Length: 231
Ligand SMILES: [Mg+2]
Image (cartoon, rainbow, N blue to C red; front, side):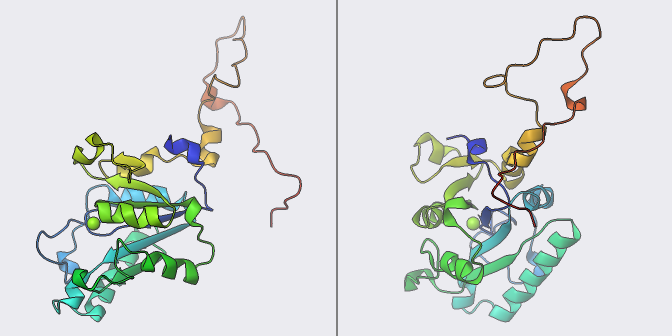
């Protein structure tokens, strides 16, 4: 499967894991305060690009530090408010953040890899279609969550060992969020990219004048279905 074949546009939703995708994971610990939240390189640029493509961007995050009593829900909300504000200031967007405070051993429906957070998001945002959704995360639990809901899955990690196994849970893999963002082409941007020679052979070059770069010629107008009116 090719990522560009998905024709991702603003009808699509991007679900993102938080720790290890947006910010550095704290090994054997939890981000309990905003000052401990450390953005991974390129994430702001990535979110800016992705915000221009996906209709909804939603974070789904397991936070069992709450269940363990290490932090409160109120403290987590402060972190998430700051997170969303900073992304907005940098020109990106995170539309909603869902978290699961439950302990792993509880086996909660609301904790990934179970699908409760995804269903809750769709209930609150009916525009979400799981068939037109991507789950991006850095663990197989994230991939199972996405798979169970019928999403495309994107594994973000430098660790290639999962891919060597050809893991059935992973549709696409990138080392980080920015590389993924730069690889997504919406149909709109595809119109502006140089034409593929497969289906539409290029016209013969002009005989006398020097050829002008293709980027200077106006792009063809996007096809508009006659039955739809744009409001
Ligand atoms: Mg993670």
